[in-house]
Structures are given as structure tokens and as C-alpha cells.
Image (tube, rainbow, N blue to C red; front, side):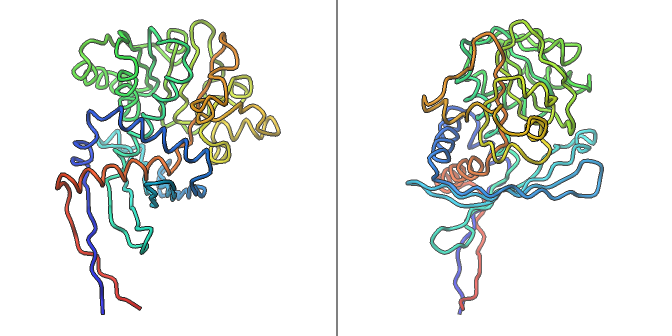
Length: 335
């Protein structure tokens, strides 16, 4: 005897169609997931890193459970192949699988790279809004890839009157392509190129770092107007920079591993005292946005699986409502 249940497969174009223009809703979903995690209403095992053949290729599995009124469980499986960019394709690809809390059976398979990029950008924008004392006159984007494009999209929802954005990347071609796409998407914003990361950081009040770096190279944060750093790629800042800074994270246990800059700082400093608080504590009013007004605050998010499954649940709900995606039967033999 067997039972049949449908799995809803939601491909990338449908995911993008569902999420485009819904930045405020995505930020609300991410903020709610952070709050639930801070309250202990989640189970987030450490991510599993699988090195793959190639210089920097890897795949990561992020399982998670998020409780509350709309509980959800699932896993994100995402691969990072940096050399894909040179081949003209996306660096990251993946999917999110959601499983029934009643039967354990999977009921949704959602394209995961878009979900991952949007939840990353949403968390960055939430942190920027919470940690910045005022809307920055200029935004800097270090790394001209898919993640920072999404970060820009979300930051311009938070601060729609930003007029100037500085760009920096090791590849001039990536900067040019990013700027061309961004000008078409955001015609009211002026885009300029900084010579390097030092010039970028020196010329902006807020900088988002989203690169493919595997070892730290930023040995200092320049003085001047820089007040908020969104350290999304996690391996750019030297441990000495982290130890001297005001640090806000999403989860200390998760971010202090896998050779991140904070992991190196923990080893160098002999503990985690350099981490002041979590973003959820700032959002809840339990911690101040900044330690001092005249020094940069660094937000370093590991990227918790609860964010992926919470956003994937929203995508599944909208796809099921609107008839998007493809339903396939899922057969299981009882007993």
C-alpha cells in the first residue's frame, strides 16, 4: 500500500517573480525569524561544509527549524563555484527543501540561490537601518556580484533618497557590468568607481562587503565618515580590525567558525568578548545600535538557515496561491 503527496517545485523565474517588489515583506520575514531565533524558538545545527574538487569550490547544507505560529523545517543546499563568474554564469546555485512537521515528507523544493541572496540582502538592510545613526550620503559596495546588487536593491528601499554609490572590485569588467545594470535599474542614483577598497571605505559612511575572499586582506578601516560596515562575506577583515571594532553578529556560535574573520579574531583574542551583541538584541531594544557614535560598527552575519526556510515558506505559500511552479507526486510506501 502506498500514499501519494504532491511536491511543489518552484523554479528560479517564479521565485524572482514572487519576491520582486516585495522587499519590505522580505525584511519583515527576516526580522521575525531573527526575533524567534533570539527567543530560542529555533533549532539551527551547524552548517555542513563540503569541499569539492577545484580551488575554492564547495557546497553547504544549512538545516533549520523555526517555531512559532507558522512553524517550518527544511534545509538549504547551496554550492559556491567562484570560477563560474568567469564563465558567465552565477557563482552560487542551490535549493531549499521544506518538510512537513506532521509527516516529515517533503512538500516543497524552492530554487535556493535567489532565496539566499534576498534573505542576505534583507538582513544587511535591516542591520543598516538599525545601526546607522542617519541615512548615509554615500553607500559603498565592495564586490560587484549578485549579493551586493541585491543589497543595493534593499538599501534603496530603506533609504530611497541615496544619490551616490561607490563601487570597487578586483575585476574592472565586473564593475562596469554592475554599474550598467544598476544605472538601468536605479536611474536616480549616480554610480562611480573607487580605485580600491581603501578609497571606497574612506569615501562612504556605509560599506557593504560581499566578495569571494577566503583570507583577510583589509588590514585597517580608514578614518573619516565610515560608521557602518556590513561584512557579509565574513573573510575580508583582518582579525586585528575585528578585535578593535564594535561588533554585532547574528549568532556568535555560528559566525565564529569555518575560518571567518571572527573565528580568527576569537583565536587571536582568546574569546568572544569583542562581540558586543546580536542584531536581534538591537532590534528588540535590548542593546544600543552602536558602542560609540564616532567609530565604525561591523555587522557580521553568518546567514542562519532559519532565514532561508522562513523566506522559502513564503515563496511556497505565494506559489501555491497563484498556481506557480510544478506539482509532482511523491510516493512513499507505508510500513
